[in-house]
Length: 133
Image (cartoon, rainbow, N blue to C red):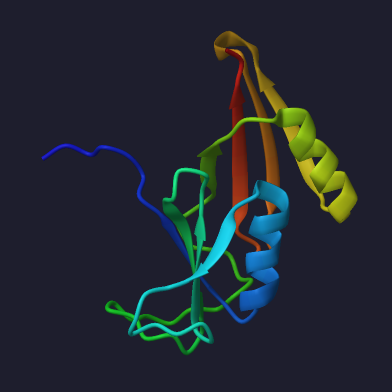
């Protein structure tokens, strides 16, 4: 077996629309309905520019194959953050400023990496990575 890449991240929320708007506004992801048997009322998927559904957003009452207790907005246990490789550092900073979002930046000079850390409406910490070309 070999891992090829991260497929997607799933977020369970009581703020489906707000969460979808956040990812659309900040990252430019396209919101689409999740496939049946999921409905637009209980699930939406956020697609990148290559047509990949990289963030799945589900309501609290959305059916799940592996069900467990979820408390939106609480700490996410052992999951500390979700890291996304991105482009457009300055544009992302401008979007965060326009949104009035709290964020921190970091520079890892040894590998020429600029980072932005910010949380979504559900307190999921995002690490947005911008590698210099």
